[in-house]
Length: 285
Image 1 (cartoon, rainbow, N blue to C red):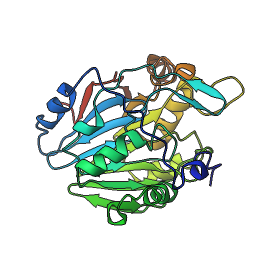
Image 2 (spheres, one colour):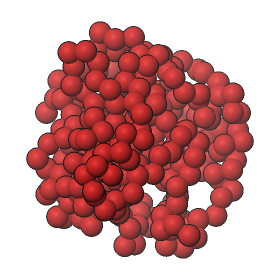
Image 3 (cartoon, rainbow, N blue to C red):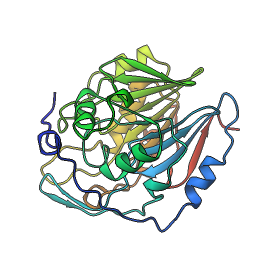
Image 4 (cartoon, helix red, strand yellow):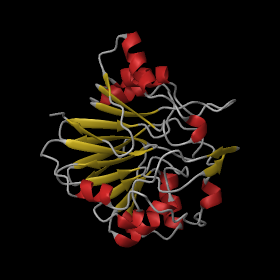
């Protein structure tokens, strides 16, 4: 259990949506909705921060999408450093939103409310996130609460909640997304801790989406490049996709430093750097 910094503040009292509009209009979502993922493959589009769209031949999941603007959080002014890639009101093809924890840039009112209204998607998250969603009058039958190693099958994707060390939210999940023989790990805002070896032994991880950032002075809320490589090594991951390095002004980091760490440590893994809007498909052609 963490601090639950935003839990009590938002319980029954969601923050007012910022109602920002994307300069990309609808071309990004139109391209994704029309993109055909071949059987047995998984496509990932980076949304910036910890956000991704995961698409298979049968399923579309949004992971931690953030459609809000700059924030004042934990004593810091956080300026949004990347564009908004889509308008949440334009989202029509979605089977579920998967949420790692209740922080503002992971559980986001700007995304939840229009998507709940316009689609029939599920909302999957840890217990405290599920409690917040229910307090916001999201229909209970559309909320899925997952504890450690619990799972939810969504069409051809098995979503498995994993342990996560994140001291800020009340509860937090990392996730393994299992599609056939492919397993993709998403760390949320999780810091390095001793459970990654356990997760690596339970699952044969192909791709690890791992949080990276510069820690603000006097705070430890981000993994540095060396910790990202250590996490990937303990997970046994073949590919690393650094994430969250681009969203907030105080935490910007160079993702290519992860590639340098892999080279220095002589690790047999590949780093894939995705800028906002870019796609990675696994297995690669």
